[in-house]
Image 1 (cartoon, rainbow, N blue to C red):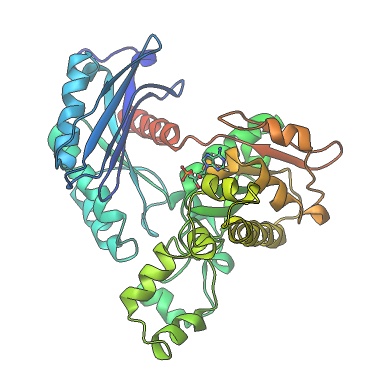
Image 2: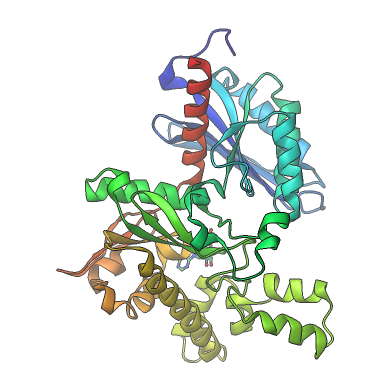
Length: 414
Ligand code: AMP
C-alpha cells in the first residue's frame, strides 16, 4: 500500500462482519464515519443465497442481487469486482474484521498474522458459533485482498477493563485458572461507540463519564461504564447470560439445566437449542422474537396473541430494568442511561416500560421526547430535572474502521 497512497480524507477501511451464513460489509471513511458502500450476503451455502451491494454515490444506490448457492468467497469476489468497477480499491488502506471472542489475550485491535489466527481458532471453544465464521471471513479476505493489512477488532475487548470481582463466577477458582471460565462480555464496540457519543452530548471527556448502556437488539446486554471504561456487563462467558433477548433466555437458575436433563430427559444439544434459539421473547410470546411483531400484536386487542405478546415484552423490560438498577452498585455517580440497538433506538414503548421501574435512580422520561425519538435520531429523552437518558444510534462499523485506521497509523509511525 505504499504505491500512490490516497490523501487522508480519501482513506477507506473495508469492514467485514462474517457470520456462519452471512457476510456484512461496509466501506467507511474512518475520519468522518461516512459509508461509501455497504453490502449484505445472506443465506450463503443455500439455494436462497443473495448478495446485495449498495454503492452510495450522490444519493444514488446501485444494487446487485444474485440468487445461487454462493459461499463467502463468492460474496467477497463480487465485492472486489464492485470495488474495482467503481475505482474504489486504491482508497482502501486496510480490512477491519469484527471478531467476537478475543479472550484475555486481546484487549485491543491487532494486525492479523498466523499467531492471531491461531488464537482466534483456539477461542472458538468459547464462541463456537462466531469465531469459526469470523475466521472464514479473514481467510477469504486474505485471499481477495492479499496486499492489504487485515485487522481484528474484538467484541470482548472493551470489557477487558472489568475488575476480577465483576468477571469471576462463584465457582471453583481452578475453572478460571485452568479453563478460562469467566465473564468476557460482548457488544463491546457498540457500548464503546455510544459511550463516546454520550460523552459528546454531556460535553465531558469520556474518561470522566459514568454511564449505563443498554444495547437492546436481537442480542441484548447492559454495560456499566466508569470513567469511560467498562467495569461490568451482563453477557458472560458466552452470549447467553444476562438480560432476556430475542431467542436467548438470559439468566436462569442453573438448576433448571440439571432438571431439564435429569428429570425431563433433554439432551445437552436440546438444552442448548432451547436456551439459545427457542427462549427469550420468542419462547415466552410463542409468537415471535421480533419486537415489532410483538408490539403490533400487543396493541391490537382483537389479536389472539395480544396477551402473550404483552407478557413477553413485560418480562423482557422488567428484567432489563433490574439489570440496570443492579449495575448502579458499581458506581458512585451516574451521568446518563443510554438506549441503543434496534429495540433501544426504535421502541418508545420498551423505553417507557423499562424506565417506569427506575424512578429510584431519578430516571424519568418525557413522554413527548420519547415518542419523537426513533429511526436513527439521537438525543436526550429525560423529563425536566431527571437524570439524562439518551437514545443513541449505534455504529459498530465506524468503531471498527476508526480503530483499524488508528492501529495502522500507530504501526506505520513506529
Ligand atoms: P438489531 O439486532 O440491533 O438489528 O435489532 C433487531 C431488533 O430491533 C428486532 O427485535 C426488531 O424488531 C427491533 N426493531 C427494529 N425496528 C423497530 C421498531 N421500529 N420498533 C420496535 N422494534 C424495532
